[in-house]
Length: 236
Ligand SMILES: C[S@@+](CC[C@H](N)C(=O)[O-])C[C@H]1O[C@@H](n2cnc3c(N)ncnc32)[C@H](O)[C@@H]1O
Image (cartoon, rainbow, N blue to C red):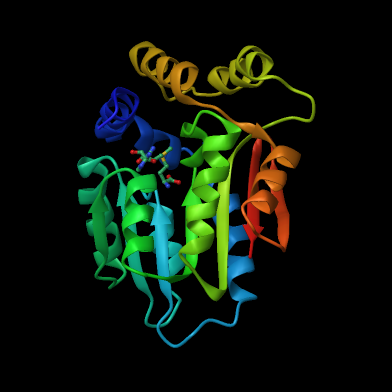
């Protein structure tokens, strides 16, 4: 595992800190996943749809998203085995028996491509910003495209830069506002979070992300929902 990935894994292995973001809706999971459910409801899905969740974490919201989809076959991938244990619990609670794979999403996608594994929905929330360059993200999108069935859809939720904003401005403006809203965090949790964000968060502007998706071969690309510095992308 690269040293970058082992540090990312270390942060998410301390799942209780990230769990607070979910519990207090600090990253607007509720609104973003509701918007995702609306997008999914528009799709004509096959009888046993295969759903791949890249960087699934504890799948807390993914479980709620998948629960109403009949005969869904859920596969989750994450670096953190701690998070995957929670994911199994959360998915089992809604009667989904998941396939869970510990590892780097890019390498796991390579395996899926080699084994000709295809999915109807590929989903990723708050994960792809850990890929540092736009080119790295584009290469990941190419792999995602190859793993989609013909009528499949890729749905991504992630942080994003405002138009014209640099990563430095994002860290000094957007993130400063964000930290000031984390009332439930102790000083230690705040500093732990801040270290992770400053080292590993590489958001892109929405137009750049759309261009990277188009460059990876996606045709229909949309951002049906945005809230603050978070965006939902759909691509097929
Ligand atoms: C911010 S959490 C998001 C979890 C969940 N998807 C959600 O929306 O709450 C990011 C997750 O992506 C995982 N992750 C980050 N980079 C990864 C990579 N290269 N391969 C696999 N998982 C990765 C982390 O371990 C973590 O569980």
